[in-house]
Amino acid sequence: MTRSPLHPRLRAATGMLLLLLLALTGCDRTPETDRLTFQAFGTLVDITVYPGGVHDLTRIESKLSEDLEGMHSAWHAWEPGALGRTNQLLATGGEFSAPPSVLPLIEYAQELEQKTNGLFNPALGRLIAAWGFHQDEAAGPPPDADRLDALLADPPRMSDIERRGVRLRGQHPDLQLDFGGMAKGFAVARSLDLLTDLGVEHAIVNAGGDLMTRGRPGDRAWRIGVRDPLGKGVLASIELGSGEALFTSGDYERGYEWEGERIHHVIDPRSGRPSRGLVAATVLHGDAALADAAATTLMIAGPEDWPLYARRLGVARALVVLPDGSVELTPEMVPRVELRGEVIHRIRAAEPGVGANPP
Image (cartoon, rainbow, N blue to C red; front, top):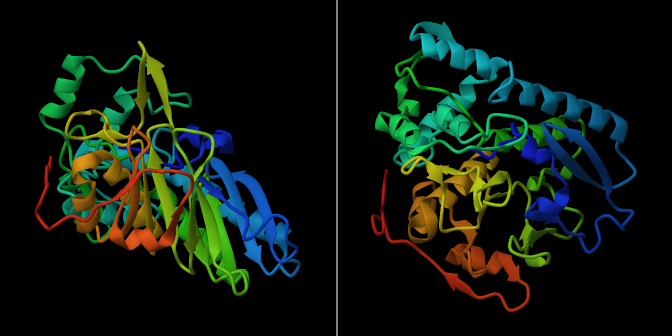
């Protein structure tokens, strides 16, 4: 399971992104806001600040890009860095002190794994690598049946990491961490904190289409466009208040074609294969890391069980797109979304314990 800032798919053109920042009734046309766009964290980062003309944009870009690149280096799943060293030490089975940059992700991932009964499992880095996603350009061949059987016979879990304070010990020989499903959420939230430290009270940080807000642009809401993943238009628009994150996971984001089949990067730990049944999942929440992880989890849960896993994660506002282009959304998401065109949509709410299909 992976969809992180750690992957070069995020360097792709914004035309491949589901989420697009719409004008705040014209945010890139009004003099009331300033915008910065730069490459960092392996993706295109877009910063909108309000009011315009009062902030040191050069300093903001310098500080944010430096911080984002530091996180990118520390959390990269296959290049040398703090996470790579952590994976090497976990494989030895010996006890060691966790790098401060990695420990919060491990702690949070263990909580999320418990809440999802293992559906969200960043310990499956070897499985992700077997599908060709631990390299600069994702490519086949996919793992054959024997390789998949071996990887799924006794798969590692986040619970295979023993924690004693800052000390860690790996308890599974195949344990390899890949925080692709949540690291960008941590990075976006941290960037907003840094903006606050720099004196910016009203802003959006948009990293490769996933974003979070702080403050408001005057007396207006921030307005976000959700692109139709099956077409070129806008599927919907969503208004965000202060301190809200909007994250999406989709099967169109990173992948390759193999013998006529689209192989995408969201891997279901139950089957060991790319998830099926949903084209995209969008989550609106006040915790950016949770929104990031939840979007991935809902993609994996699929069309039957996504409302149940949203409930388990405490996500009230979510929207998913099915292969036929129809949309399903939670009741709490309905008043926040303005669907465009003749989009077929259904409202879904799960009862506790109904429709569960845990791994």
